[in-house]
Length: 84
Image (cartoon, rainbow, N blue to C red; front, side, top):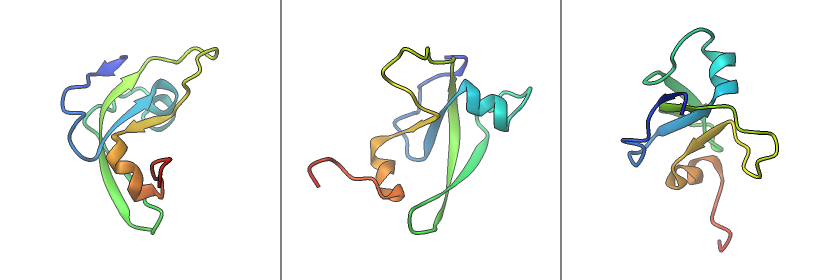
């Protein structure tokens, strides 16, 4: 982690962002504990608290992301489990 930690990440509406996103939207700031609003699939705004910023993920990693939130939050954005 570049900033923050994973404590409390099991709480609803927590968000981990990449270093790239942090630098783009929070230049020269520590975005941990800042709030961001993400719009759900149905148009509903949802407020998330940034809990951590990850260091840059190597380009050869099979896992690439800009933001990570708890699996349960995925339904708000029209995402469902593969079995659904």
